[in-house]
Length: 348
Image 1 (cartoon, rainbow, N blue to C red):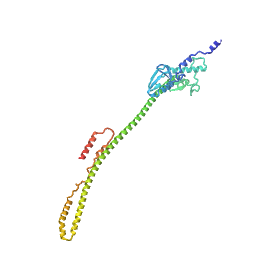
Image 2 (cartoon, one colour):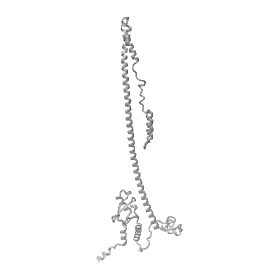
Image 3 (cartoon, rainbow, N blue to C red):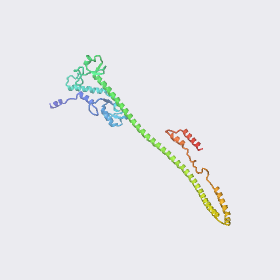
Image 4 (cartoon, one colour):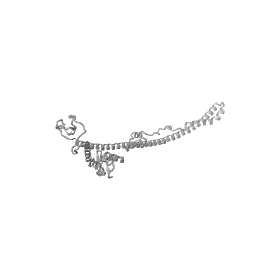
């Protein structure tokens, strides 16, 4: 008796319990949350659960990755759309809706399970306050009630069941969301490309600036070296000319001193009172004075223009013109040839 009574207390599993088990997600272990996606291995998952699992194992989601089915371990290769690229299982979603409706009917205590579940929720019609909105006007694109279709403003319109339009538009919205997600992924990829391009532009510009600075530094070095060489040539000729002039001036000074002494001697001879004494000394003195005067007239002198330094002139007009026209890219060979010809003409 006790065994029979105990056995009678155990409720055998109902078909609804088996159905609920079949409609459970293997990831969250709860009933599927729409939208539901189907894998190539025919197992179903909540898309939100599958997306969380995929993101945790594929951090670089926009480049695609591998998703492994949590039920059979079957590997699926996904593109950059990720889980949103999987096909929705509308059949399972409809079964979930029917199951929930049956659960509501069972909880309300209705004896007839074949009757259509009574709507207990939903907005009421504004024209007919006692009527619930239960149909959809296809012509006006608005939900309405049965009284509006029979007697009201929608009596000449085409209508459809509210649930079918609901499922259709819900599916369209899901597809639109998937398309928007895919578009967002493409935009994110474009943003990443733009960031990479900005970094590349900055790096290339920095290298170009560095190369340009190095080339100008080289030009500065060449100009400084050439300047030093030319200045040394001017200094060398300056020193040679100054040394020559100083040596000539020294000779002039020595002769001036000798001539001054001879002049003093001749003047003293003129001051002597005796004719005999004067005549004894005057013959040699007159000869020395005349010779000294002739040497002064024939003394060596620098050539005319000896002090000029005009030949140390560098023609820089062509170089200035070339530098002023310096630009990026390959230089025009004709431009340099013209500059060289002008330089040769100026030197001639």
